[in-house]
Length: 323
Ligand code: NDP
Image (cartoon, rainbow, N blue to C red; front, side):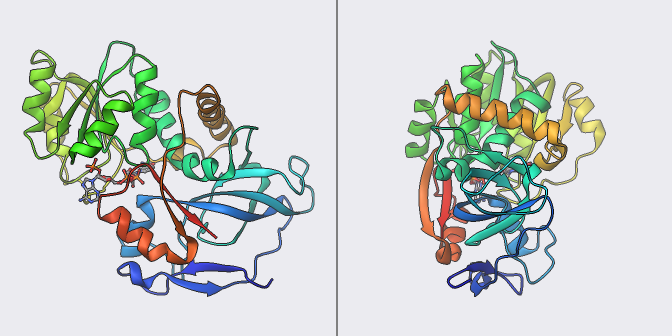
């Protein structure tokens, strides 16, 4: 198919290993559909595969979320037809086309564009997982949220706030602090401050019920020190590097804490989980509780530039790659 291409890496390394490569879209097998992609979402995890923090089998096409229009339908597919607008999680979405199982594709409801789908399906399902499946914060409880205006954070903060949860956000700049407040954070702490002391001061010395921590290496200790007795340390990302190992006795010493390291794919591996999450996410978007926050858009062929942007820590909301 003329003009079809993907972004491929044949070695691990910096953003420059991401190269535009001609490809022939794979024809859908039984139960699959071929989608012409309108957009792929960029996620921090894509950089982990690029650098080797997570294992990638080379040559490798990064990308875990996308959206587009169904172009060809494989044998036996009854749930989708040519022209349907869909969004999905999948491996290898940095491409003009994506072929995958129809059962894993989510039909986009009216009122949600393909760009909005690609910008929210992975990050929004992650926010759903954290708030509804991992630790369901109750109205009146307090949550510490790191990177509050990043891809996941820009959905997590308004969603938590809409549930009556008091959000204390931690970020790195005045501009981001302002945006975090606008999206519902009750208080914002600078990551350069002594975060745990500031949290104690804001919670009458008690600490927070839960810390949703995507920063990892640089934030884990502050999160643990900010929790109330029996609080939950939900460490779900490594933006600053992998978290150091922690002895179980440390959890006891700090007050019988619970630590968990959830991964979205375990929560949506079965169709029931995926559908439950999608219903919650699309429902919240259609109700206006959540809005896709598309902070940056790059041409797909400029994926390397997009990687440099997200790794600089300067991006806001979601980043899209457009074929
Ligand atoms: P973000 O858009 O949140 O970008 C990362 C943010 O982390 C930055 O903007 C910055 O926010 C903060 N940060 C702090 N230290 C650093 C650093 N050293 N380098 C870069 N950024 C830093 O990314 P995503 O929303 O795509 O992902 C956030 C994290 O969540 C990632 O670690 C990702 O892997 C993880 N994740 C985990 C999932 C799971 O299933 N467990 C699913 C989806 C994402 P600030 O300036 O506010 O500090």
